[in-house]
Image 1 (tube, rainbow, N blue to C red):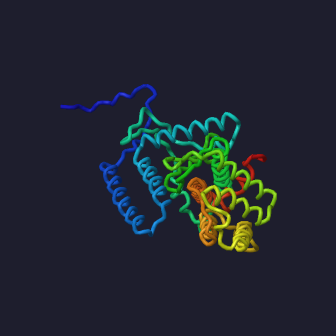
Image 2: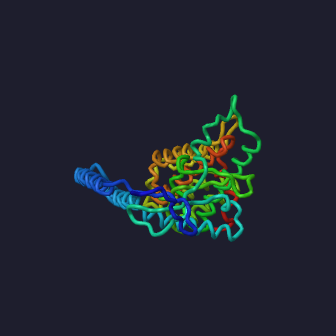
Image 3: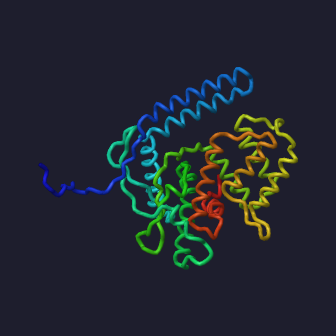
Length: 328
């Protein structure tokens, strides 16, 4: 018969969260990928799909298998934590207000243990209406604006300094809590399974684009950069572009909308990305997988920053102009 007893705690024991893979998910994932590959091969044989679809599917299958491997996510977690630590040591204040859980022990593909992180889920924080009977105090508004700015700057610092794109951020996997000085908010990123390494060539593309935006380059300069550094790098040819003058005109219109006009707010985040992809599709331009990964990561981070600071436009574009190196 077991009597009531106090459970002994080890020295340095702490609360922890257990990540567990749903039983059978690996088998069902492989079954889904097998069915998809059969449909793909039928499409290739019937001529309704291009040969590039097979490469795209292979990349998707590899990515999907990584997503059900918790050991892979913990490896990414350690990598991002190390990069943040490096930024803090170099005096980057923004990185000091962004943190991630600490891995505990050795992860397995099926289960991983990380430190328990306190805080309020961002999806709960943003339920308070911005206007109306309930409003934010000036102190809360200021701390949330600062937290959004720190997260935006950290996103670009990780990308430029460590070639890491923070992918998959959303209000459901981000916590907000009071920082050490009790006057600012700290942002806690609970998951990083969609983070990925970015090659140096793509980083250079982004640096060149930022330089053009800083000096207010015209649409032809920006369009030419997209043509040579995005379309041609993805296997496209200049002569394949449909209506080149129309493409430059579309870029000019998009640049105007992204700057805002009168009472119209500037296009940002997912809406801006969607409009850009529409232009690429309309004029038969290609975009590489890595360019799209960086763009979607930035759009997701913008959405989180906008939820943190609902009175601004996220501050991600402004942070890009501040953080990006002056020279490529």
